Length: 129
Image 1 (cartoon, rainbow, N blue to C red):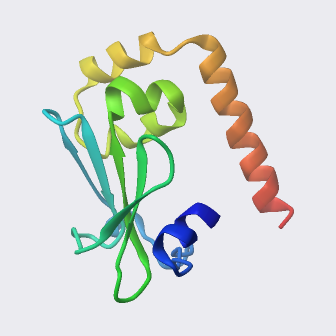
Image 2: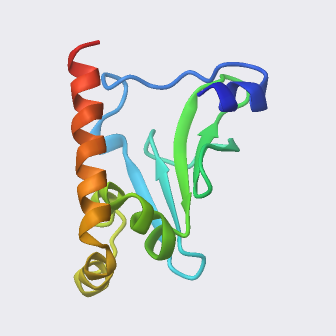
């Protein structure tokens, strides 16, 4: 988050789990651009993209300093290869089963194992915070 704060000159406010609801999550996928948008508050909001990784961007409302969503570039062809846990968003984005399975088959076992370990460590960190 330090790089995001530096880029913005303020620390963005990340919504907590009480503020986010499954009904308020809007996920859309642009097949031509291979870009996934995850809107946290049921609709796209005017926001600035701030890069977190080479494919992941936080969408930050400049007026309220709140994170209002995510953008993932190269979603199926790059991002899920780097972080297979991102595949959890595909069903919400309306991507068809055949495409999902074709992408899933291209992810190496080692990459899946890395992703699982990261998820477990993340959950442990949350549980002990």
